[in-house]
View (cartoon, rainbow, N blue to C red):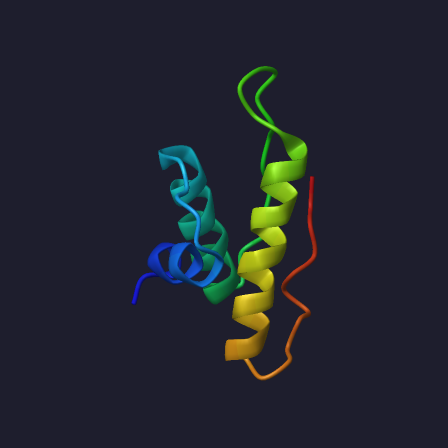
Length: 76
């Protein structure tokens, strides 16, 4: 199951297209040990929403990695 489908079913929400892309990018970065950076657009985006999505993806990844949360730091 795709990470986006999992989150939408688990939290009973429908993510917008840019949110789906963000979730997939964060998860992919965590899997590959890449640094995570994101910019909040001046309009039409919310830092709060993006932070929540980042936290959800990290929590799911942490659970899958059996508690390894070292890759879940936010780099801005």
